[in-house]
Image (tube, rainbow, N blue to C red; front, side, top):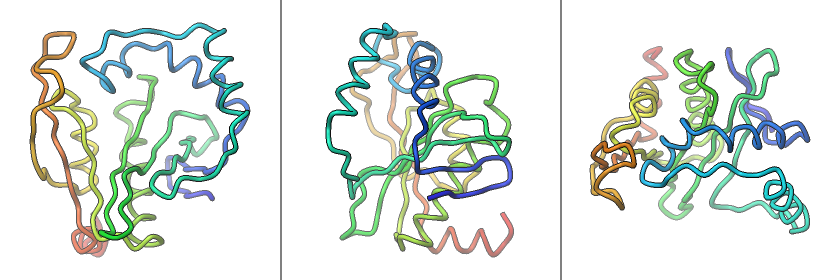
Length: 191
């Protein structure tokens, strides 16, 4: 499945070249800090990475009904990250979205916001969810800005599993939410 936008395209299928990108990304400290700010950075060796790939390929790949990942490519075809939904609750018609753009040269260009918006539109349109949420920590300003630009509102704050990040920043989990009605209203309004 492909979800095309103006700047980015979300693709459901993986390519072999994605593995090389992932290896490079797993060895970049900055995005890892914003993903797990309370854990010291540990890169991955080529051998360990190859072992993980071998294990992943040996397991049957049945899609999970509660989560799914799309790779993000630029409109020109450059692989720049991934976006996903997770904790999908089909009974409550609610799920969470997440995004990762590991390399800083694509930050601040609207690619992340467009990728999140494409996925949220899919979740409300095709999957008929009633609410979509996203969560981050208060130090992740880029993710907070992406959520707000996508129409999400702060739904709650709670303690993080650690009080401070490894860089000394106070940690607090922040959740954002948008309802189907809010999404449709902003789409009709041209936001």
